[in-house]
Image (cartoon, rainbow, N blue to C red):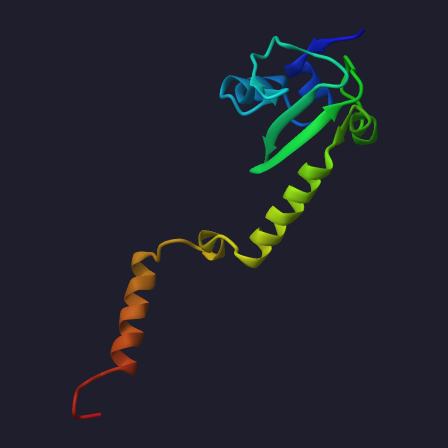
Length: 134
């Protein structure tokens, strides 16, 4: 076997949990082979460069092997090799995310409920009353 479908390879290499997820990403143009957007039925062979995004992190890998079945993670990692530029870029992006976290991620509960707003209002009135009799 010297070539196989890209959606099957992405599934076998454990980049996506299902082939349908891999197909969706290919249809949206988020996966490129040798710099070109491809369809799910496009063939991939050893030596091709595959560029994709996984969990909002860009990755560029070189295909090293093909497998028709999905194996364990150590076996899947032998099917590709990530480029040095990709590793450096991912490390840089992870460091940026660590230093500048998304503000929305710090929100624990979202909007306050009606009861929370009442409690806040009561606490505000008690603490910051402008009345002269206190």
